[in-house]
Structures are given as structure tokens and as C-alpha cells.
Length: 249
View (cartoon, rainbow, N blue to C red):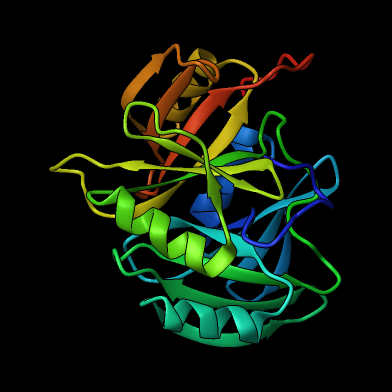
């Protein structure tokens, strides 16, 4: 994904975990990724790594899950574009003190995603390293409809599909991918990928913490990957990224 500070319109720039047990989530991800946490409210915190903001977590009723946020320059205009393209707004624009403005949207397939207008925080301050955001993909039973929606809202351009998956570009740069989700796990959604120095070690750590491994670890064109769930059921991907670090994450 584009490096921090280069978040063009429509590029995934931030991810937020909602979970029923905030202290439990902090213990899980603190051990798995080496995250530290800065409280930003009575039931929310920002996760940091090497002092940089990398994600946010907040307490909310089940089910637990990660929500991908897409960058936008004018939140009000993007909200209008979502509605015009057949989506809906689940949470109207709101201010995040000292960070920016956000909204929560649902596309016509039913996938939830966030909108983020950074002011002054553009998004994640560290990416493409172990313990940080590396990629996001949209999966649904109808990827053609998804591609049409996000093209209309954000102006995505697409490469030629490969095995049903399409690379989306913004300003000519890779932004995310859109592809099919097969039944029974075919519910539309955005899937967050986090980097790891060693996928096998990281999945061992995840299991020891009470998480589960759905598929993998296995080699992919993008690095050794595993589809996993944390100990509250939030799903994400671990993918190996180059690093000199020797940590489990």
C-alpha cells in the first residue's frame, strides 16, 4: 500500500478494531504485534508501534471486527457520492479530536467501510512493516458490482482480473484489490492484512493467545500468508513482509 503521508483519495489509510473486551484485545495484539496503546477515551485507544500510530481499537458489542477506512479529501462530498452510487451512511460524519473527521458507510453489497479525512493525521504513520497495515481487499459474491461502486465513488482504475481478483489503482498506484468471496463465508466485507516477519511463528503465537487459524500459513505471490481470527473472532490476514527484525510478528 502507499507509504504513510501519501494517501490519495480512496486509498485504505486506517483500520479500526471494534471488540467487546478492550483490555483483552490490548493484551492479544500487544503480544502478537508488539503494539503499545494510547487511550483516547474511556473505551478506545490508538495502537502504536515504534511510536507511530498504526491502528485504533474501541469497545463495542459483538461481533468483533476490523473496519478498513478509505482516505478522502472532502468527507461531505464523498458521503454524497456514496449515497449517489447506491451505498448508505451508517454513521454520519463526526469529529475525532486532534485526528480528523470520519464516517461509516455500507456499500451496495453490504460491506462496511470507513471514510477518513485526516486533519492533521492522514492515517497510519507506519505501514508495510511487521506489525503494521500492509494491504486491504474487498471480497463479495459480486465483485463486478463492487468494482462499479468504488470506481464511481473514488475513481478506481483496474488492472486485468486474475483468478477473479482485480488490482485497484489510484493515481496509477496500487491501492487495494477486489475479488470473489465463496460461500459459505461469502458475506461481503473488507479484509485487513497485517505484516509479519515470520508467518509461521506469528500463527503459533496467535494460537497460544487463543486465536484461530482458518487457512494457511501457505505461500502466495505476495508472501507467506494465513487467514486468522483473534480471540474474540475478528478476522484478518497475516502476511510475511521483508524485515531485519526477529520478533514473532
